[in-house]
Length: 180
Image (cartoon, rainbow, N blue to C red; front, side):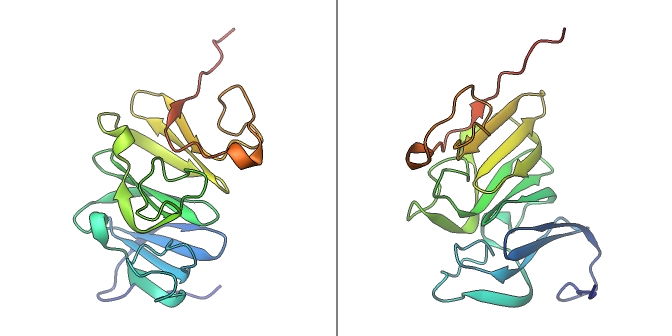
């Protein structure tokens, strides 16, 4: 293990999350740091992958998260989610299967800056998790919503969809079985 220091003043890190080839860290002030590959804009620094293919030291994530206090991070293969202290959900990175929770990316394939998932306005998020190309959130009221790839039925929607038709950008409620 190698100790990695937050940029600027000595900041305490409260959480970390790893994607396929990038890392996120959460500071005690609720800021997000990122480093590693930026092949799909997953560093959230606003730079296109061509302009910044990788970053080998922690850098601050800005954009829509600049004045937001993040309390939880989740990372997928090439995308990530952040939950704010107000229950807002932000997404960044690759979006080829809709794993960012909507068609939020300007180019449709990825978002190089974190953007708020507007499909969840009015539904405060308590927790988030990411898979390879899908995402799941738990709302403050206990509902489970999923979006992204459903190749193996991982969205919990009661059906599997072939790989070529797996773009599910709209968060959909997972219907849970009733207790026995």
